[in-house]
View 1 (tube, rainbow, N blue to C red):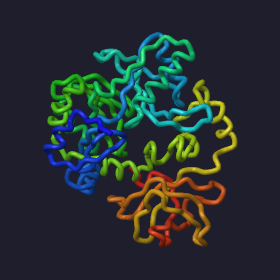
View 2 (cartoon, rainbow, N blue to C red):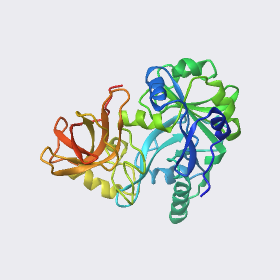
View 3 (cartoon, rainbow, N blue to C red):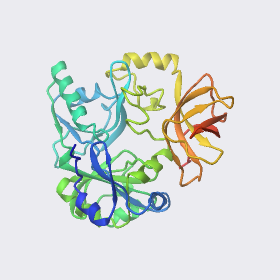
Length: 365
Protein backbone atom coordinates (compact mmCIF):
# COMPACT_ATOMS: atom_id res chain seq x y z
CA UNK A 1 0.00 0.00 0.00
CA UNK A 2 1.31 3.43 -0.94
CA UNK A 3 1.47 5.68 2.10
CA UNK A 4 0.07 9.19 1.96
CA UNK A 5 2.69 11.92 2.22
CA UNK A 6 2.27 15.10 4.30
CA UNK A 7 3.09 18.45 2.66
CA UNK A 8 6.34 18.61 4.65
CA UNK A 9 7.54 15.16 3.56
CA UNK A 10 10.60 16.49 1.71
CA UNK A 11 11.51 18.74 4.66
CA UNK A 12 11.34 15.84 7.10
CA UNK A 13 13.39 13.58 4.85
CA UNK A 14 16.06 16.24 4.41
CA UNK A 15 16.24 16.72 8.18
CA UNK A 16 17.04 13.05 8.71
CA UNK A 17 13.88 12.36 10.70
CA UNK A 18 12.98 8.74 11.40
CA UNK A 19 9.74 8.01 9.56
CA UNK A 20 6.95 5.55 10.34
CA UNK A 21 3.53 4.53 9.06
CA UNK A 22 0.61 5.98 11.01
CA UNK A 23 -3.00 5.92 9.92
CA UNK A 24 -1.97 5.33 6.31
CA UNK A 25 0.51 8.24 6.33
CA UNK A 26 4.30 8.28 6.38
CA UNK A 27 5.08 10.60 9.30
CA UNK A 28 8.15 11.49 11.39
CA UNK A 29 8.30 9.50 14.60
CA UNK A 30 11.36 11.36 15.90
CA UNK A 31 13.87 13.98 14.77
CA UNK A 32 16.46 13.82 17.57
CA UNK A 33 15.11 11.62 20.35
CA UNK A 34 11.71 11.18 21.95
CA UNK A 35 13.07 12.36 25.30
CA UNK A 36 14.68 15.50 23.81
CA UNK A 37 11.48 16.38 21.96
CA UNK A 38 9.25 15.58 24.94
CA UNK A 39 11.32 17.74 27.27
CA UNK A 40 11.36 20.63 24.79
CA UNK A 41 7.54 20.77 24.90
CA UNK A 42 7.28 20.35 28.67
CA UNK A 43 10.00 22.95 29.35
CA UNK A 44 9.82 25.43 26.44
CA UNK A 45 8.30 24.80 23.00
CA UNK A 46 8.22 22.29 20.16
CA UNK A 47 6.58 22.05 16.73
CA UNK A 48 4.74 19.08 15.24
CA UNK A 49 3.58 18.33 11.72
CA UNK A 50 0.02 17.07 12.25
CA UNK A 51 -1.14 17.37 8.64
CA UNK A 52 -2.24 13.74 8.81
CA UNK A 53 -5.29 14.83 10.81
CA UNK A 54 -8.50 14.89 8.76
CA UNK A 55 -10.12 18.10 7.55
CA UNK A 56 -13.82 17.85 6.64
CA UNK A 57 -15.69 21.04 5.74
CA UNK A 58 -19.48 21.25 6.02
CA UNK A 59 -21.42 24.15 4.49
CA UNK A 60 -24.97 25.00 3.56
CA UNK A 61 -28.39 25.62 5.14
CA UNK A 62 -28.37 22.33 7.06
CA UNK A 63 -24.65 22.21 7.96
CA UNK A 64 -25.44 22.76 11.64
CA UNK A 65 -28.29 20.26 11.79
CA UNK A 66 -26.23 17.58 10.05
CA UNK A 67 -23.11 18.05 12.14
CA UNK A 68 -24.95 18.38 15.43
CA UNK A 69 -26.68 15.04 14.88
CA UNK A 70 -23.40 13.24 14.25
CA UNK A 71 -21.31 14.34 17.25
CA UNK A 72 -21.95 13.88 20.96
CA UNK A 73 -21.34 17.49 21.98
CA UNK A 74 -23.67 20.35 21.12
CA UNK A 75 -22.18 22.58 18.43
CA UNK A 76 -25.29 24.75 18.04
CA UNK A 77 -24.08 27.25 20.62
CA UNK A 78 -20.64 27.72 19.08
CA UNK A 79 -19.98 31.26 17.97
CA UNK A 80 -17.70 31.94 14.98
CA UNK A 81 -14.16 31.34 16.19
CA UNK A 82 -15.14 28.69 18.76
CA UNK A 83 -14.71 24.91 18.77
CA UNK A 84 -15.36 21.95 21.00
CA UNK A 85 -14.29 18.36 21.56
CA UNK A 86 -16.73 15.53 20.81
CA UNK A 87 -17.04 11.87 20.00
CA UNK A 88 -18.64 10.23 16.98
CA UNK A 89 -20.86 7.35 18.09
CA UNK A 90 -23.00 4.74 16.37
CA UNK A 91 -26.55 3.89 17.42
CA UNK A 92 -25.18 1.66 20.21
CA UNK A 93 -23.30 4.61 21.70
CA UNK A 94 -19.99 3.03 20.66
CA UNK A 95 -17.25 5.51 19.81
CA UNK A 96 -16.17 5.50 16.17
CA UNK A 97 -13.69 8.34 16.63
CA UNK A 98 -13.12 11.53 18.60
CA UNK A 99 -12.83 14.93 17.00
CA UNK A 100 -12.65 18.69 17.36
CA UNK A 101 -15.44 20.60 15.62
CA UNK A 102 -14.68 24.19 14.65
CA UNK A 103 -17.05 26.96 13.71
CA UNK A 104 -14.50 29.01 11.76
CA UNK A 105 -14.44 32.80 11.89
CA UNK A 106 -16.36 34.45 9.07
CA UNK A 107 -13.26 36.10 7.59
CA UNK A 108 -11.56 32.79 6.71
CA UNK A 109 -11.18 32.49 2.94
CA UNK A 110 -12.20 28.82 3.14
CA UNK A 111 -15.93 28.26 2.64
CA UNK A 112 -16.84 26.29 5.77
CA UNK A 113 -19.70 26.67 8.22
CA UNK A 114 -18.11 23.87 10.24
CA UNK A 115 -14.74 22.16 10.14
CA UNK A 116 -14.61 18.62 11.53
CA UNK A 117 -11.12 17.27 12.35
CA UNK A 118 -11.13 13.48 12.72
CA UNK A 119 -8.05 11.40 13.47
CA UNK A 120 -5.46 10.21 10.99
CA UNK A 121 -6.85 7.74 8.48
CA UNK A 122 -10.47 8.50 9.42
CA UNK A 123 -11.08 11.34 6.98
CA UNK A 124 -12.64 9.29 4.18
CA UNK A 125 -14.98 7.35 6.47
CA UNK A 126 -15.97 10.52 8.34
CA UNK A 127 -16.81 12.37 5.12
CA UNK A 128 -18.77 9.33 3.92
CA UNK A 129 -20.68 9.21 7.21
CA UNK A 130 -21.71 12.86 6.83
CA UNK A 131 -22.69 12.28 3.20
CA UNK A 132 -24.68 9.12 3.95
CA UNK A 133 -26.64 10.78 6.75
CA UNK A 134 -27.19 13.89 4.68
CA UNK A 135 -28.91 11.74 2.06
CA UNK A 136 -30.79 9.61 4.60
CA UNK A 137 -32.12 12.68 6.40
CA UNK A 138 -32.77 14.71 3.24
CA UNK A 139 -30.60 17.64 4.34
CA UNK A 140 -29.09 20.45 2.29
CA UNK A 141 -25.37 20.59 3.02
CA UNK A 142 -22.10 20.35 1.11
CA UNK A 143 -19.54 17.99 2.61
CA UNK A 144 -15.94 18.01 1.35
CA UNK A 145 -12.90 16.01 2.41
CA UNK A 146 -10.18 18.68 2.25
CA UNK A 147 -7.52 16.78 4.19
CA UNK A 148 -5.03 17.12 1.33
CA UNK A 149 -5.82 20.80 0.86
CA UNK A 150 -4.67 21.87 4.34
CA UNK A 151 -1.48 21.66 6.33
CA UNK A 152 -1.64 21.58 10.11
CA UNK A 153 1.23 22.48 12.43
CA UNK A 154 1.02 22.26 16.22
CA UNK A 155 3.15 24.63 18.27
CA UNK A 156 3.12 23.47 21.89
CA UNK A 157 4.76 24.53 25.13
CA UNK A 158 4.97 27.40 27.59
CA UNK A 159 7.02 29.48 25.15
CA UNK A 160 4.65 28.90 22.22
CA UNK A 161 2.93 32.26 22.56
CA UNK A 162 6.21 34.19 22.64
CA UNK A 163 7.48 32.39 19.54
CA UNK A 164 4.27 32.66 17.56
CA UNK A 165 3.70 36.32 18.45
CA UNK A 166 6.80 37.26 16.48
CA UNK A 167 5.42 35.64 13.32
CA UNK A 168 1.71 36.50 13.39
CA UNK A 169 -0.63 39.47 13.44
CA UNK A 170 -3.12 37.54 15.59
CA UNK A 171 -3.97 38.98 19.00
CA UNK A 172 -2.94 35.89 20.92
CA UNK A 173 -3.86 37.41 24.29
CA UNK A 174 -7.49 37.43 23.17
CA UNK A 175 -7.60 33.72 22.27
CA UNK A 176 -9.07 31.50 24.95
CA UNK A 177 -8.93 27.71 24.94
CA UNK A 178 -10.75 26.20 21.98
CA UNK A 179 -10.95 29.61 20.29
CA UNK A 180 -9.54 30.48 16.87
CA UNK A 181 -8.86 33.48 14.69
CA UNK A 182 -7.88 34.07 11.09
CA UNK A 183 -4.47 35.72 10.89
CA UNK A 184 -1.22 35.61 8.97
CA UNK A 185 1.67 33.45 10.12
CA UNK A 186 4.88 34.28 8.26
CA UNK A 187 2.67 36.09 5.78
CA UNK A 188 0.44 33.05 5.17
CA UNK A 189 -3.29 33.11 5.91
CA UNK A 190 -3.78 30.71 8.82
CA UNK A 191 -6.55 29.55 11.11
CA UNK A 192 -4.83 29.98 14.48
CA UNK A 193 -6.49 27.86 17.16
CA UNK A 194 -5.63 27.58 20.84
CA UNK A 195 -5.85 23.81 20.97
CA UNK A 196 -3.44 20.91 21.32
CA UNK A 197 -2.79 17.34 22.38
CA UNK A 198 0.05 17.73 24.88
CA UNK A 199 -1.41 19.33 28.01
CA UNK A 200 0.76 22.41 27.49
CA UNK A 201 -0.29 25.87 26.28
CA UNK A 202 -0.12 26.04 22.52
CA UNK A 203 -1.69 26.45 19.13
CA UNK A 204 -2.70 24.44 16.10
CA UNK A 205 -2.21 26.26 12.81
CA UNK A 206 -4.19 25.36 9.68
CA UNK A 207 -2.98 26.82 6.38
CA UNK A 208 -2.94 25.90 2.72
CA UNK A 209 -1.14 22.66 1.85
CA UNK A 210 1.42 24.36 -0.40
CA UNK A 211 2.26 26.98 2.27
CA UNK A 212 3.25 24.40 4.89
CA UNK A 213 7.00 24.89 4.57
CA UNK A 214 6.73 28.66 4.99
CA UNK A 215 4.84 28.31 8.27
CA UNK A 216 6.97 25.41 9.55
CA UNK A 217 10.29 27.13 8.80
CA UNK A 218 9.24 30.40 10.43
CA UNK A 219 8.64 28.67 13.78
CA UNK A 220 12.23 27.93 14.70
CA UNK A 221 12.19 25.52 17.61
CA UNK A 222 12.61 21.81 18.33
CA UNK A 223 10.85 19.68 15.70
CA UNK A 224 8.91 16.83 17.33
CA UNK A 225 7.58 13.57 15.99
CA UNK A 226 4.80 11.14 16.79
CA UNK A 227 6.89 9.45 19.48
CA UNK A 228 6.96 12.54 21.69
CA UNK A 229 3.36 13.32 20.79
CA UNK A 230 2.43 9.92 22.21
CA UNK A 231 4.37 10.25 25.47
CA UNK A 232 3.04 13.77 26.00
CA UNK A 233 -0.61 12.80 25.45
CA UNK A 234 -0.25 9.68 27.60
CA UNK A 235 1.03 11.70 30.56
CA UNK A 236 -2.23 13.66 30.25
CA UNK A 237 -4.39 10.55 29.81
CA UNK A 238 -5.62 11.70 26.38
CA UNK A 239 -7.21 9.05 24.17
CA UNK A 240 -5.66 7.66 21.01
CA UNK A 241 -8.29 6.55 18.51
CA UNK A 242 -7.79 2.98 17.36
CA UNK A 243 -5.74 2.13 20.42
CA UNK A 244 -7.64 3.26 23.51
CA UNK A 245 -10.92 2.53 21.76
CA UNK A 246 -11.85 0.79 18.53
CA UNK A 247 -15.39 0.09 17.33
CA UNK A 248 -14.41 -3.40 16.16
CA UNK A 249 -11.58 -4.59 18.40
CA UNK A 250 -12.39 -2.72 21.63
CA UNK A 251 -15.82 -1.04 21.44
CA UNK A 252 -16.20 1.62 24.12
CA UNK A 253 -18.60 4.42 24.91
CA UNK A 254 -17.65 7.93 26.12
CA UNK A 255 -18.57 7.14 29.72
CA UNK A 256 -16.19 4.19 29.81
CA UNK A 257 -13.51 6.35 28.18
CA UNK A 258 -14.02 9.13 30.76
CA UNK A 259 -14.99 11.77 28.21
CA UNK A 260 -18.62 12.09 29.28
CA UNK A 261 -17.90 15.85 29.57
CA UNK A 262 -18.08 15.78 25.76
CA UNK A 263 -21.59 14.30 25.78
CA UNK A 264 -24.62 16.60 25.75
CA UNK A 265 -27.73 14.47 26.19
CA UNK A 266 -29.93 17.47 25.41
CA UNK A 267 -28.59 17.30 21.85
CA UNK A 268 -30.23 14.84 19.44
CA UNK A 269 -27.31 12.80 18.07
CA UNK A 270 -26.85 9.25 16.82
CA UNK A 271 -26.29 7.07 19.88
CA UNK A 272 -27.93 9.40 22.39
CA UNK A 273 -30.65 6.92 23.41
CA UNK A 274 -28.07 4.27 24.24
CA UNK A 275 -25.92 6.72 26.20
CA UNK A 276 -28.87 7.95 28.25
CA UNK A 277 -29.01 4.50 29.80
CA UNK A 278 -25.28 4.52 30.58
CA UNK A 279 -25.62 7.98 32.10
CA UNK A 280 -28.26 6.68 34.51
CA UNK A 281 -26.73 3.31 35.34
CA UNK A 282 -23.05 4.17 35.02
CA UNK A 283 -20.49 2.10 33.10
CA UNK A 284 -19.26 -1.28 34.29
CA UNK A 285 -15.69 -0.34 33.40
CA UNK A 286 -13.82 2.97 33.23
CA UNK A 287 -10.49 3.97 31.77
CA UNK A 288 -8.00 4.36 34.60
CA UNK A 289 -4.38 5.30 34.90
CA UNK A 290 -1.91 2.60 35.91
CA UNK A 291 1.46 3.74 37.29
CA UNK A 292 4.17 1.20 37.95
CA UNK A 293 5.85 1.19 41.36
CA UNK A 294 8.36 -1.42 40.23
CA UNK A 295 10.70 -0.75 37.32
CA UNK A 296 9.12 -1.60 33.97
CA UNK A 297 7.00 -0.34 31.10
CA UNK A 298 3.30 -1.31 30.86
CA UNK A 299 2.93 -1.90 27.12
CA UNK A 300 -0.26 -2.32 25.11
CA UNK A 301 -1.79 -5.75 25.67
CA UNK A 302 -0.20 -6.40 29.08
CA UNK A 303 -2.59 -7.79 31.69
CA UNK A 304 -3.57 -5.84 34.80
CA UNK A 305 -4.36 -8.06 37.79
CA UNK A 306 -5.06 -7.88 41.50
CA UNK A 307 -2.09 -8.56 43.80
CA UNK A 308 -3.44 -12.14 43.98
CA UNK A 309 -3.34 -12.52 40.22
CA UNK A 310 -7.03 -12.15 39.35
CA UNK A 311 -7.52 -10.53 35.96
CA UNK A 312 -8.84 -6.94 35.97
CA UNK A 313 -8.13 -5.60 32.50
CA UNK A 314 -5.58 -4.96 29.78
CA UNK A 315 -3.27 -2.03 29.08
CA UNK A 316 -4.48 -0.10 26.02
CA UNK A 317 -1.59 2.40 25.90
CA UNK A 318 1.63 2.47 27.88
CA UNK A 319 5.05 4.10 27.98
CA UNK A 320 7.90 5.15 30.19
CA UNK A 321 6.98 8.67 31.29
CA UNK A 322 9.92 10.99 30.55
CA UNK A 323 8.61 13.50 33.09
CA UNK A 324 7.84 11.12 35.96
CA UNK A 325 10.53 8.55 35.28
CA UNK A 326 8.05 5.71 35.83
CA UNK A 327 6.04 3.40 33.60
CA UNK A 328 2.48 4.59 32.99
CA UNK A 329 -0.47 3.18 31.09
CA UNK A 330 -4.21 3.24 30.56
CA UNK A 331 -6.59 0.34 31.11
CA UNK A 332 -10.35 -0.25 31.32
CA UNK A 333 -10.98 -1.60 34.80
CA UNK A 334 -14.17 -2.72 36.61
CA UNK A 335 -15.58 0.15 38.67
CA UNK A 336 -16.92 -2.18 41.37
CA UNK A 337 -13.52 -3.82 41.98
CA UNK A 338 -10.93 -1.08 41.61
CA UNK A 339 -10.57 2.41 43.05
CA UNK A 340 -7.85 5.03 42.52
CA UNK A 341 -5.08 4.40 45.02
CA UNK A 342 -5.50 0.62 44.95
CA UNK A 343 -2.49 -1.59 44.42
CA UNK A 344 -2.42 -3.88 41.40
CA UNK A 345 -0.01 -5.82 39.24
CA UNK A 346 0.95 -5.49 35.56
CA UNK A 347 2.27 -8.58 33.80
CA UNK A 348 5.42 -7.23 32.13
CA UNK A 349 6.89 -10.00 29.96
CA UNK A 350 5.31 -12.57 32.22
CA UNK A 351 6.55 -11.00 35.44
CA UNK A 352 4.06 -9.31 37.80
CA UNK A 353 5.14 -5.74 38.52
CA UNK A 354 3.65 -3.76 41.39
CA UNK A 355 1.49 -0.87 40.22
CA UNK A 356 -0.89 1.76 41.55
CA UNK A 357 -4.29 2.59 40.06
CA UNK A 358 -4.72 6.33 39.50
CA UNK A 359 -7.00 8.86 37.90
CA UNK A 360 -5.71 10.81 34.93
CA UNK A 361 -3.98 13.03 34.07
CA UNK A 362 -0.77 11.65 35.49
CA UNK A 363 0.59 15.22 35.50
CA UNK A 364 -1.11 18.25 37.01
CA UNK A 365 -0.64 20.91 34.34
